[in-house]
Length: 187
Picture 1 (tube, rainbow, N blue to C red):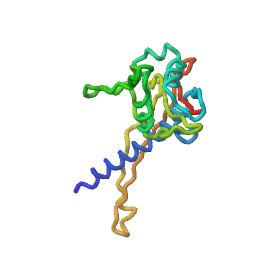
Picture 2: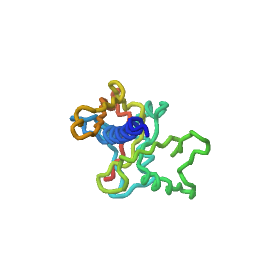
Picture 3: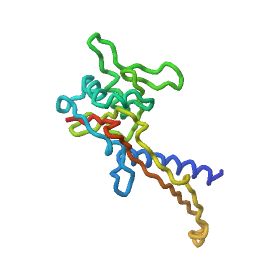
Picture 4: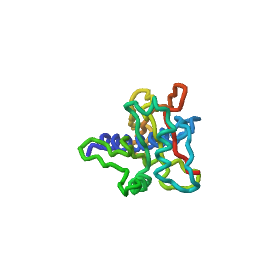
């Protein structure tokens, strides 16, 4: 077994998950400012309720100049996607449009959907459940690539080998006067 290759892959997956959490929810202090933290909020119309009208109001709360850009779309937890998939219009037709071609994302009201498991998973008071806007406005800066170090000497006395991985990165939402993204906040 090539332990170093396996461990490098496992650490890469783990660091990727940690990075996603930080890029989603990070405070901006000693970690990146997450997309949820950085984006402006739009509250739902009714307390503790998430309805199709809230999605439409969220879309139109984003500046039209951002709505027409190539990186525009929704981001939500998979459990919130299930709630959205059950939304119907006045004629009983589902608003959700599943992608039927390989590599084409699912769409909601014509906009692509990105699943992010670090977002709120239930419609609860003060939960930020849905992001809409120019997702490409959130920028990630990576300094070099992930570095994996093998520590032979440190654990030589106990006949062990240690591994440590380093990754340096930061992220923030770039804005040019008006908010390119909005987060739906359950009131």
